[in-house]
Each structure stands twice: as structure tokens, then as C-alpha cells.
Length: 446
Ligand code: SF4
Image 1 (cartoon, rainbow, N blue to C red):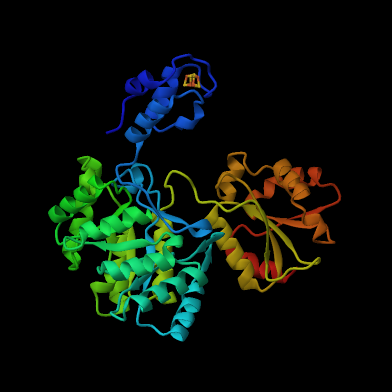
Image 2: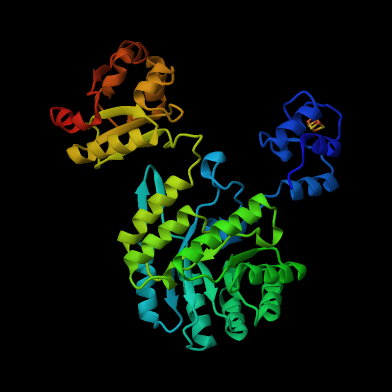
């Protein structure tokens, strides 16, 4: 349960030294309680107080890390039931399934195919994260060999799927270094699977056939000292599976039920007979409240909409989506190519870059940081002023890339042309069209 500001204050040093950026420890405690400050901002919190505060401020759904290195990923850590209350933090992880009876050549080909499913959108690289390696009864050596190949040769993190502890042990020995998720502990194997997860310090998924049975298992595993759990209520019928997701989320957040305070794993792959229906079911779990969604396969036409849905749901609704300020070459521009300036609101960038691409006129798109505002709003709010834009052009390095001295500013910001000119003497400031849709025709005349 979250602590109040006063309860937090009692744990602080009470020296009012101001190093945390606020005048008093009480003010800092109030900020901490309302989520406006981080505990690390106070260098004088004792270890004991830190432990108490960390426990009290831990999210009601435990964040569970899977994988190692740059592709390490986290599921769970959510604090709200509805996205608009604050934000959702850790995007639903998407997994594709491979069976352990796959031959080496097909495995290599599948990994290459899966790896190619990467999409650029608003300056982000969208891709699935996991491969669920399912024990297909080909023996523990085959399971271990596949696990090792995936761990060694792909960028995917792993879910090792078997209820056979011997097979799982072989998989852990082969691919444990990549911190896979072990799926699953059940009523039948909970002691041995729990011991294996504890000994190898790996996250463990728990599967039961009802929420009550699930709570009994998570209780047993946490008593064994396991913390990184992922839960599966066992429902494979769509309505029941959705109801379970909502019930688990509500129980963890609203009732503080620690036995259900873990991210979930869901299996559209076991709920549909074709990939289209699977994708629909997966989209339901991305919205409500799947921590991990396991698909039977990956195809671009099923993945792309899921990745976009995920992107939209897991962006902070209180912050506009932005792209990084900088120079974006579109269509292999050269030193004679036009230079077009716009703001860093992601949608603006996406529309403008799309229209430039459609024009087939190679161009330099200059994206100026406007705190995520569109052109007209940014200009009205003073975030896209002429002197700012001129300064940005000067510092951007575009002058080393082109030999002409003309920039095209958005039609909606025509009023800044004079100020840009003042900042960039000798340059021609051309006012482009107001609507991005008119850019292709405009650029073709250049
Ligand atoms: Fe109090 Fe710590 Fe802030 Fe100093 S840094 S005022 S001790 S909360």
C-alpha cells in the first residue's frame, strides 16, 4: 500500500538541506507521495528507510525483466487500471512460437524471417521481442539445441515452454545465460520448477486452471523466495480469458492482492484456428491487460497492426509523441536537394516525411524541437520562432551537406520568415504550402 506524505516524511533525515531541489524534507516527502519526485534525489536516505520506501512505492504489479543486454525487456510494473489515469509503462511483449522438433535449417530460416519483422514508425523501431520455444516431445537434447541456437544467433529473448522439469533443466543449461522466462510451474511440478527457477535465478511463469488455484501457486512460490513470476490463469476461452485479465488487474491494483501482483501471459495461439482470429484476440490482450501475448506465428500483416496498437496504448497520454530533433534525409538527398523545416510533433513528422517520400524528390527534412507541438500551435506558443529556427539551422550541420542557401518553412509559419532571414543572412527563406498534402507538387517545382 502506498505511504502518505507524512509517513514518508518520518523516514527522511529531516535536515532540510535542500539538496533534493525543494526547501524542506516535508515538501520532498509530499512530492514523493504524489509521484512528482524520485527517492534518489535525496542522497541522505538511510538504507533501512530506502528499503521501506522502495517496498511501499513498488508498483502493485511487479516488473519482471526477461533477457540480457541491449534487448533486455520488462513486463508488468503497471500502476493504473485505465491508461488515462496516468500511463501504462511496459508495452505488452509479443512472442512467436517455434517447436523443439524444428530442424536446424528451418530454424535458421525462421529466425531470419522473424528478425526481418521490424518497422520504422515515428522515428521508432517497432519489433516483437520474444520467441516461445515449445517442447514438441522431441527430447531434451533437441529442446536444448534449439534454445541454444535461438539464444546464440538471434536478438530474440526466450520463453522456454515445457512442464517437464528435465527438459526445462536442459533448456536452462543451454540458454540460461540469456535470462529466458520459464513456462510453466503447475500444480504437478511446482516444487521442482520453483527450485530450478530459484537456483538459476530466472523468471518463472505459473499456470493454473483458475484464479484461485493460481493464487495458491504464487503463494507457494513466493514463500520459496521467488519474486519474478508471470501468471497464466489457464483460460483458453476468449470471454473467460478476458474476464480473468480484468479480474487479475483489478485485484492487484484495487484490492492490493499480492498473490496476483504479477504480469500475465496470454495465448491467442491456443484460442483460434487461424492467424487472423489470433491477431484479433491478441489485440484484445494488448489493450486489456496482457503482459505477454504468445502468437503461433509471426507475419507482417498480423504483427504490424499489433505493434501500432501497442505503440498507441503504451505512449504517455499526457505527453505528445515526438521525434528527435535533427536532420532526416529522405530519398538519398545530395548537396542540391531541398531543405524543408518542420516541428517534432510525431504526427507532423510522419505526414510531412510521407508526403516528401511520395513526391520522389530527395530532400533534407529538418526537424526542430517544438516540445511535440504541431506547426501552427508551436508557432502560436512561441516554440517555433524565427530566431529559434534560424539558430537551429545554423547549428544543425545542414550547411555542410548542401551547397545552396535556401530553406523551405511551413506555410502556417510564414510569419517567421523575416526573423529566420535575420538569423541567416544571405539565405533565401521560401514559404512552403500550408498543408503537407501540397508538398509533392511544390517540391516538384523546385
Ligand atoms: Fe531533506 Fe533529503 Fe531533501 Fe535534504 S535532500 S531536504 S535531507 S529530503
